[in-house]
Length: 337
Ligand code: CUA
Image (cartoon, rainbow, N blue to C red; front, side, top):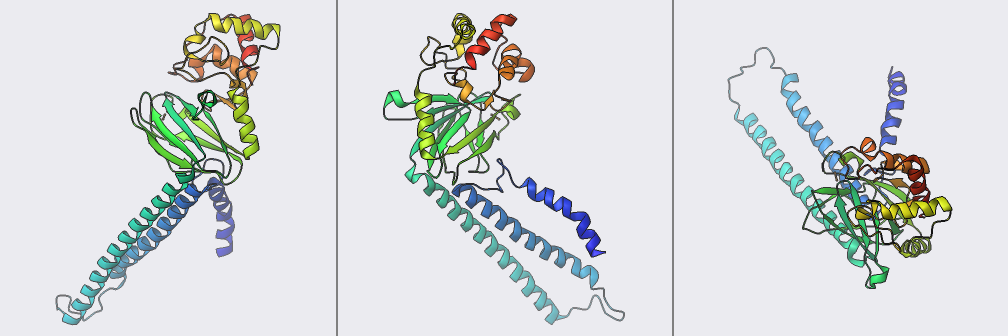
């Protein structure tokens, strides 16, 4: 019977454990901050489970221990009363000790988290917008400051400091595999330090309801070995490449004549809008519209043709383009690697 129950439950247990793994799970930590938090989650859960079981036993005990025939229920037994009082006092004392212990654990975990950023090698300002992430890689040399969107590249094994703020409403930045969540608040700067132990791709998600497209406000952290990260950063600092074909050239001209330039910037061209994602190297990113679509020629065309159908309420307006014009602009954008 027990064996049968085990066989029936095994697939569910496997599914449950698999649910804890993956590129967006606080229970699958890939950095020191997430390690610390995962340990706290498991410890709190285990301890609270033990306390819950003990309380349930204490509640159930009087129900099970029926009075025997001949007992005098209203007769006071001073010795028994003293024993019960001692049990209650011990339980209250244990509760206080457990609460103080858990508070101390939280305090020391916070100290560990704060220490991660003390040697940060890179500072990235992350600004939340409805509904995308603006990223600014800070540098003492102005020409080495990089502005990009949605996809955060960091060197693996090195601590990185994120400065979090917002231009509109409160958002919350959460990469569960790497760190806890922290709010992005208009007019205020929060500091979040992260470190990825190994190269990998980690998914993040806005964790504070911020309007209609809150669920489509994803982000990715791509941790790479230092040489690969440096190469990426140097590539991204370059202005956009020249259009590679006649169609792409026509697309570039069209882009500059249309209202696209009012919102988007493309480095090395007159397009200098800053209210929407920087497109200088848009085709090098893995997704479009803050993780809503994977990057492909088809999805680029679909997004430009009908942004409100894909992400209703987003601030990307419908551009008035015929089929040839749309193809030309897509040809230009997909060349911006
Ligand atoms: Cu931004 Cu939810």
